[in-house]
Structures are given as structure tokens and as C-alpha cells.
Length: 465
Ligand SMILES: N[C@@H](CCOP(=O)(O)O)C(=O)O
Image (tube, rainbow, N blue to C red; front, side, top):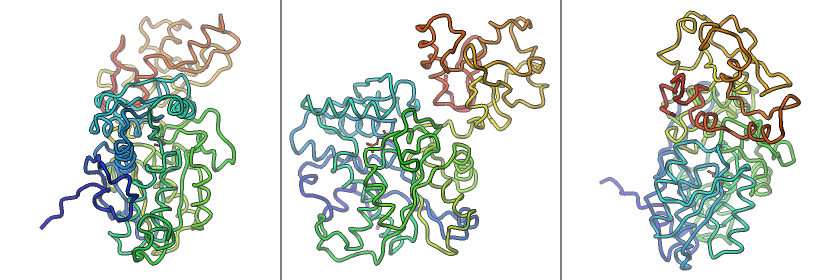
């Protein structure tokens, strides 16, 4: 008879602190598939499995930690919780807080959250505070709010979050019969690598002081932890905080991870690594996952696979090694991966689709259709909005009037770079440097196509309008 999964607190009660068990708030999280990935095994010469955390109730691994954090808060009689988020934490906190009858406030970087995640937080009734800053600024503000007001912080700086998230390591061992040789995963705020490492050590009987630490060991060993940050947001790799983290992998666009020291400890104690992968490597891995493995993930989730493929190509993956890669969130939360342009076009942000984009508008003008090479031809300049057209002749017919006036060209460019010396006023420059509604709306899609507007160029595959 099939086992009805009861959520991680009930399933691993004897290995969790007592205070998270007093009033359990659950949506049935955990028990996610560990999927064999023959394609990745073939490419790496290893025996690779993917832990599909997008199958959690709100579509990400955060639910494992949120059930314990919200349960603990509920047990203490909390009425409200707060978190800073790049999207997944807010969706999860909002859902579990609602389930517990609590108010949830979420602080997110304005314009930097994938539409699917934002929709979740709103749908679950969160009080949304969009901050003019990045995730790290949001976390500073959330910490202050929790100090001053009777509201509990449910980011992974809350130890109850780590307790819940460590159960993913238990599940891996339970499924494989022992710990893998290598566990690869993305690193953002670094709570997850911290939690997995704790879980693996506990299951191997190496933390006797932990809840359930006196229970018999389940695993005979622990894996090497391989963490991967996005190259534009790789503070641990660089050894210093990154003031303006930037990557297509919005979930790990973090410049100063809260669990930095713990992540380094996991790396060093396990004999592992933390490395950076480029956005193009992330997108390539995303394609492998979707088109070859059959698992659709959000872009950040592909960072672990990107890192594994890179290290395999460098000869760092021992033949036949058993490898688990955590893919952290579901692709439907942020469907931008398949239609994201390559780096050159992304940094330009002109709005021109790359040749690989499957979401080319069906209503392309005749010159667009005849233009063989649809790659972005905008290049950065040092004046104006920062972009200009390099080869105007190639799309002359696609402009409204056919004339090559500067204003027509500019109006096509939704670049959010700050204006430089040619700015008329500093105020205007600041306004331009912030994402406009148009650029913001394009973020979740990632295709580069502007939302429905005068040219009606909405992305036809992800419906980000
Ligand atoms: N990627 C996270 C960032 C917050 O991390 P947490 O570990 O503190 O929850 C998100 O989804 O918001």
C-alpha cells in the first residue's frame, strides 16, 4: 500500500527539535522525487540523480524550512512573520503563514522578482514591500523589523529553517541507501548548503548533540559538498561581498549571503568546492535539464548542474561516482530560461530576440522575417541610455516611420542603464536607471521582448505581458 507522505515534521519527527512539533503547520512538503538522470551520467561518467525540489507545495525547497519555522513561530504564539526574498522564500512564507492564520510581510527587491513567485506571495495574502535595493538590502531591513516589532524573521538565519531543510539530505540517504559521493547545489543565501551538510552529518552519526543525535547512524559516510554561485553574484568565490549582484538566476542574485561562514565550513569540512558558473553555463544546463533530462526548473536551479558539467569537463568527477544534484525550484515560477538571450544580448537589453529564442513574435515585420540573423545588434555606448543600434540598415523596415531618427531608435531600447554624461538632469538619469514598467515586466520572461505595448511584442511562450 502506498505511503501517504505526511510532511517533513511528521516523517522525521525524531530528528527535529521538540519545539517545531508542538503545533505543526504543514502543506505536505518533502518526499520529493530523486530522479535518475542517465543523460547527466553519460556526460559526466558518474551516476547522477536529480533531487527535484520544485515538487514541493509552493514549488521550491523553501517549504521544508518553512514548515518548521512557521510551526515553531505558531507554537510560540506568533501572529506575524517577515522575510526578505528573491522570490521563493516569500512564496513559501506567505503560504505557510496563511495556513497558520498569521500575517506575512515580505520584502523583495523592486523589479527583480520572477512573476510566478510574486504572484504566489500576493495570492497567499502577503503584505508586499518592494524595496529600492537588492536582496541584501531587504534582509537588513527585515532583520531590523523583526528586532523592533513583534514579528518573527523566517529567513534561513532562523535556525528552525535549517532544521527543516536538512531533511532533504535524509531523503537522499533513505532513497540511495547511503550518502552520495558528491552533492551539488546552487548557493544563494547559503542556507541550503548549510542545511544539507547538517543533515548528512546527522544521518552519519557525526552530530551527537543534534536532535536525534543518539539514534543509530543511517549513513556510513558524508558527501563532498559542491556549491555553485552565479558568476555575477559570487561573493564566497570572490572572498568579498558583491555590492550589485547580477545574474539571470534571480533566486541566487545575492551579494552577501547570511550563511556565508557555514557554507565555507560545509565546503571545507566535506572536502568540497564552491565555484562560480556563468549565466550562459546556467542556461546551457537549464536546456539539458528541460530538453534531455525532462525536468523543468527555474534558472537558478540549473546552477548545480552547470557546475557539475563544468567540473566533469575539467576531469574533476571520478568515474562512477554517485552524484546528487539538487534542483531547487520549479520552472513554472520563472519560465524565462528557455527564451533567455545569450549574454551579449542580455547585457544590451535592446529587446531583440536571439536566434535561439523560441518565442519569436508571430507578427514580425517583413524585414524582421527576412533578416536572417536575428541576434541582437545593439552595442553599448558611453552616452545616452547606453545603447545604440550598430546596424540600422538591417531592420530599417521595422521602425514605425522608416526614418532613422535618434528618438525612434531610443524608443526601441528599454535599457535600464543609467544615463551618463549626456543626461539632461540627474533626476532623469536616476529615473532611467530604475527599471521601468516595461523592463520590469520583461524580467520574468527573459525573452527580451517587450510586454504588450505599441508594438504588441509580448513573449508568445511565457505569457509575460
Ligand atoms: N533565494 C532566497 C533568498 C532568501 O534565502 P533564505 O535562505 O533566507 O530563505 C529566496 O527565495 O528568497
